[in-house]
Image 1 (cartoon, rainbow, N blue to C red):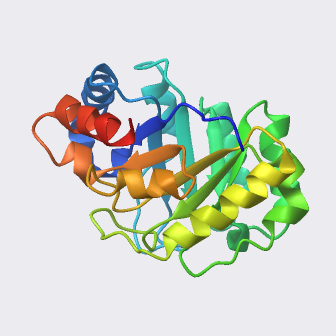
Image 2 (cartoon, helix red, strand yellow; image 1 turned 90 degrees about the vertical axis):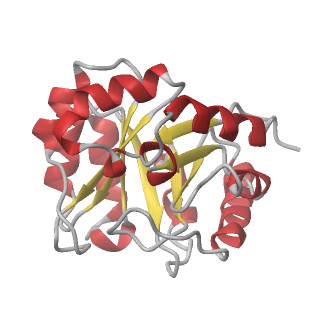
Image 3 (cartoon, rainbow, N blue to C red; image 1 turned 30 degrees about the vertical axis):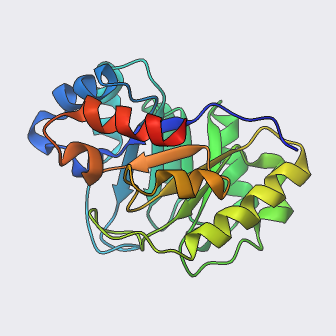
Length: 222
């Protein structure tokens, strides 16, 4: 039996007011966020375009909580290094977007940052066992990446369960994060499947009271 880990809630800036990002970061941290989730899209790997390293660098001055960068880009390596140098604490990428997954993980860790792998709804976890010694975070997507506000894909629960078994068998301190359609009414199901870190975008930023939503999530997780 693995030791219970403290849950972390990571609001996604993809659903924030882009014209007020500094204020939005402060507001959501004041409301109880543990991390800030930073979705990077390149209009190539996914059909949308969001933030670059300069935005991450600017926001770093607005908060001391970890900045969790999720790269939905191809190629990966140059941007991974740029975000590490811009102040990201964790940098995660999709294995199918990297030519050499092991090398990309080493690049991120060489910058003194935590490295993560992201698995889309239809992507198997096969690569994980071969590089788990270099992984600090596993992110299971419960929607297809590219847009906010999508509905939770239930098959992600089985993938979370499998990822949790792989992580626990490794004996390593690895976070298991879930992203996509997370709300107060389904966050418990994701936790029961093994997730300990929860990305939520429109469920938080789409509401008038960020603290009320985060508090509701914590009650569901308690």
